[in-house]
Amino acid sequence: MEVLTIERRDAAGLAEIRSELLSVYADVYADRLGEEFHSVDRFDERLGWNTEVPGFGAVIGYAAGTPVGCAFGCALQPGTRWWSGLRTPVPDEAVTETGSRTFALSELMVVERARGTGAAKQIHDELLRPRHEERVTLLVERAHPRVRARYEEWGYQWLGEVLPFPEAPWYDAMVLPLQ
Image (cartoon, rainbow, N blue to C red; front, side, top):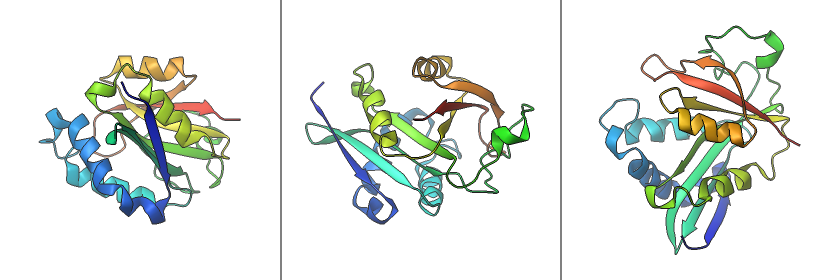
């Protein structure tokens, strides 16, 4: 794999790379685009929701000028719905948000040809590098234990099972302390 170049955008600059994010998504989820939850339109809708939340950040990775991966998320605000689908009992303080406590990593994707090259970790780390939150959280589909295992290798810990939307698959919520 070629050298990875990573660019960062905030909500105001997202328009510059939005079509590339959608392209990466369509490539990564090509076999699931027929499912309502995984359609490009639904993904674009979820992307839009993220940009409306303070602390939005996105990165996109390029190899030889072609987008090969991306990641984005936002800071969880008080009263967030992020934890509303949590089905595992946890102490209230585990899911109490202040607006500066937790960064939610909404998506981390790399295309097939970039998998196994370290691109995902580079993109992940670059997205989190300037963050000031105490921790980062993400959701990983329960049907993908190898992906969950990779996040555990990176230091994430399991918090509980989540059903974020009625039509969504089951996810594992994971948390990584920052700093």
